[in-house]
Length: 100
Image 1 (cartoon, rainbow, N blue to C red):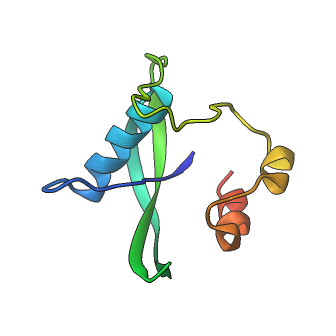
Image 2 (image 1 turned 90 degrees about the vertical axis):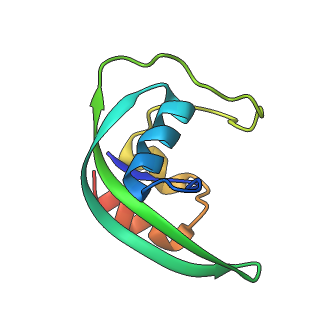
């Protein structure tokens, strides 16, 4: 599975932030297998660096931790479904589909 992470907290490595974000947003523990991409861009005048990792799911989901109520949906998607989703980084969609 390819996984972008959303926010790296102070003193966290990108790998640790990936594990934390996946756990919070899906309930799954993951093992980081490899870093597969770093994307650097500017969004609304803010420099953004996004790390993509290949991860391995460990065990079952312990449930989503969404205290802010911002997760609209959590679901496994097929490649065909991913192709038609709105994506935060539309120019990365082909790259992500190649990772499946």
